[in-house]
Length: 388
Image 1 (tube, rainbow, N blue to C red):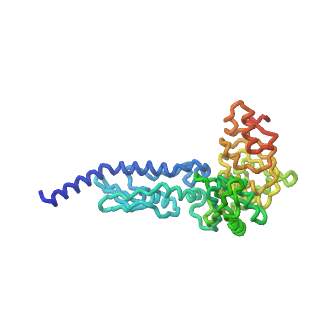
Image 2 (image 1 turned 90 degrees about the horizontal axis):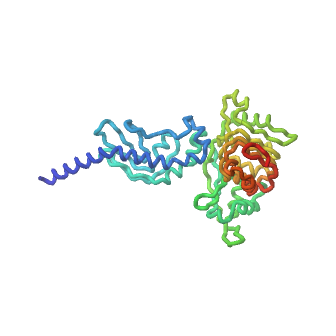
């Protein structure tokens, strides 16, 4: 048989193999991308308040129909003999395009739509790098407004949060008001600042601060980034301001934010003002900082809060909070309370949270866990609301 005949036979076998394994490729891609996008549980409000209203990410893989597969290529199914082709790109590209989010450059290899050759798979890093965009998508989509400043301190965990803020405050005129502080998986300290002058002052501290124990110098890196939340429209912001003004008692300095989203003013305006929404909580933080900075007691009961990252932005803005009511929320991890460390609390209400039930009938262990974060607390309630 001629060389051309042998080549033709191999091409037929290769096409048959690709046709039989096309669905396997799709299933593998779907499994991988579902794993890549499984970070959504970290922030419940970003998922629960998504425009789809289903409480979960939309499903983009559907066997038996034409669709765009998320590893950067595209497959078309026109019958049993349909071929799969694809352009190269990072994993998750077409998924982000469907949501109207910005798409960066992936690392996947190029595909060939005429021969059915699959594009290379991009790394998991691509979707992780777009996590912030995903978080913004549920509260307003792609960011087009002002940028904020991200401050990164490599290996900041070895300095500690309190040492970092205490040291940087010496370079800042006025109060340092960080937002969304966290330690990354690699031990870097990361937080955000809105004020550009404060950011420049913090940047000036680069390599000027040393750890008194190890002598290591603190490196400070700043950059401009899009906020992790989408600002509210002016009319919605004004509604929140109106409700908070009505709920603040200047005499006792008590701010009542209990069941906040159920306020009649919000209902009349058909505005979903749940404090689970990051941009709603950030509006509250901004208004407290501007108008209610002397507040002594904050009631946040009945808001279904589980994560307190955005609420923690209030700690640097309100120095005198002594009583906090978090009853009937969904807090289940001691780590969430640690995010509020810095308030001089003497009264804390936690009834109705799963956090309390973790200690069972051991009241001493429960009190010990709370006193590690708020050592001055003398009035503390348990799961049933009893004072212990």
